[in-house]
Length: 496
Image (cartoon, rainbow, N blue to C red; front, side):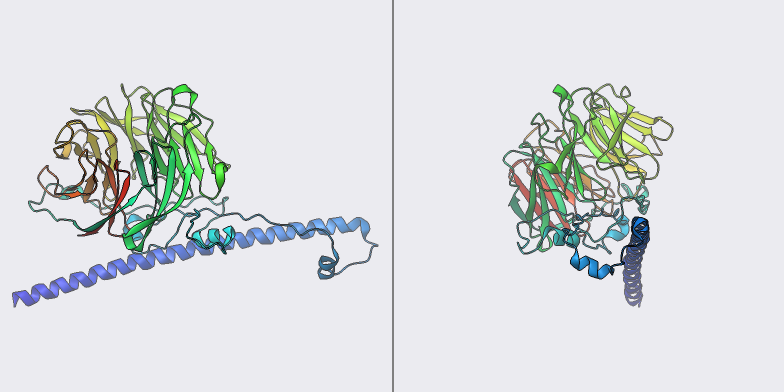
């Protein structure tokens, strides 16, 4: 009898989960349609205004020649020998992606307008752009930011003695098509089945996942080396998914930030920003802030953290130093918190700072026992963030921004091929915020479950032949994408 009650309870829970997921999907669908309706209403109003302006100009033009015969508008269009006016195609911007909780259930395929050799030659550039840009908005309309859903995960940390495994059903490997070692990988914020890779050859490749993760096709390549022929140290997508930003070095007067515009073709697609606010050394990181106003932050070896704000006009950005002297050594990682305008910075000086942009000063600071190499906020619990350190077998530390100096949990692994911890090794959160993946000097991907009350990896996936730099989780597919010094990209199908 008890078993029947348990089955009935499980069935009700499953039905409830299915209905919640359906509500999220349909809510997102309604929001998308409302955005489109608002966009086209605005376009109609603007078009009517332009029509009236043109009619007034024509009326004023005809006033001095009122005695001339009136010619029918349609007849005049046939008799005129002037060439027709060609209106250039303008590719509108893509809207900000939906909240993380609903994006998987309402993932409307929105692809940045990169060209692919697989697209038939019969399609024009205009047709491809119109096909790829589903979510559109006018440049004059302020970007609408959608707040992600907060979920309390911190109470779950270290509360379970059993681990919930993520099963890897299979792995496929493709050539990265880079000539030198890979450096970075970044998923498009609009469609995570589009991703970019950069390498020491200065090239950025744009990819699209195929056949639900069984492979990926190369969409386009861009020579994104700096003006002094330096490779990108880090890359980040603009929130609208139509531009990719790269950072370089502040030495020798080199360009510090470049923008690859995916709407353009050829060498003109890469533009270098004129401002050079970093004083010296490598710019170690770039990340866009999860705030309504579009801005990104860079952190460098000159100890500085710089905030770049988007200005009126295409690719206009204004840098503002947030701080230059809080860190006594290189800033290795930067990130932005969701719930308030705090910029996190992690340095080789073993310090972690939370800088409040609104008040213009440090909100908190924390010093640990080892150099810090990156910082990554949790995508679901906005109070939780992870810091990568150089401590052997204790590389990952979890913190609650409200508890300041209290370490919630620490994870780590023992490396077989190297005793040193490389700053090129990166971590990533799963979309549900419960798992962390990390690369390693060994050819494996380590996975950590924050609910598991032990410090070692909950599991490790042998993923490549050489060192793994990192592995990113897709939300639209149960898939991990990894990069390695073996020059391959790994696609790993998962099942929880």
